[in-house]
Length: 93
View (spheres, rainbow, N blue to C red):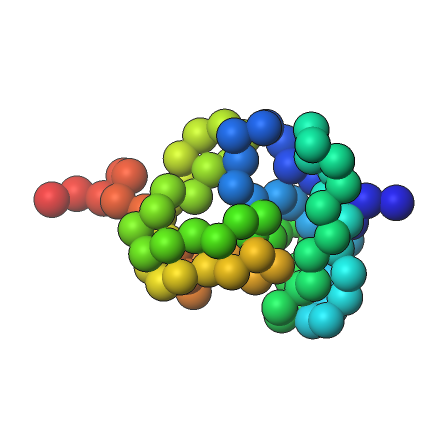
């Protein structure tokens, strides 16, 4: 059974379908087959896990849309959340 769901083929993150613990195997179904990742930290239900390597300032794509950028390098299996992404959308100058 899959542990995370990637919503759009362009996404570089997936949403975990239950709470995931550090070191746990995470299964994600991609169009090219099933990807096995190791969770690099505890990830709460409904939060994002990185599917690919993300470089600093690289866009975070969820639902086929850019939702922010990486503050720091993010490895596959890492929790993608406020500690490692930023978003300028909606901020006043």
